[in-house]
Image (cartoon, rainbow, N blue to C red; front, side, top):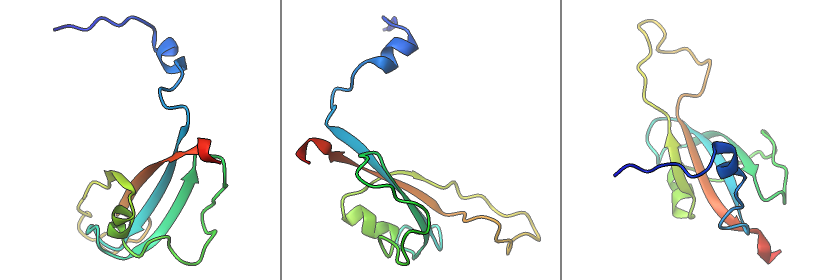
Length: 112
């Protein structure tokens, strides 16, 4: 079965949301290893509700001790970092945090 588009991309993305009362919050956790239950070593948050303006480094304690803690609290896991082997001789380079996990939750903004 072939589906024929009925509108342009611009029209489609301009269509009002079916859930205008929901907004997305994002939580990015950097873990110590590739295991979801390993320690959080870095984090940042984004609030699509507009109720707060979190920034990197705005708290001394991570929002969760582990990535699993976020799942248990209702956050949905959207993306995990691809496991890529370091080239020989670069195993101990620390230029980036390789174990990034992206979580989301939808928040009802109609309730104040």
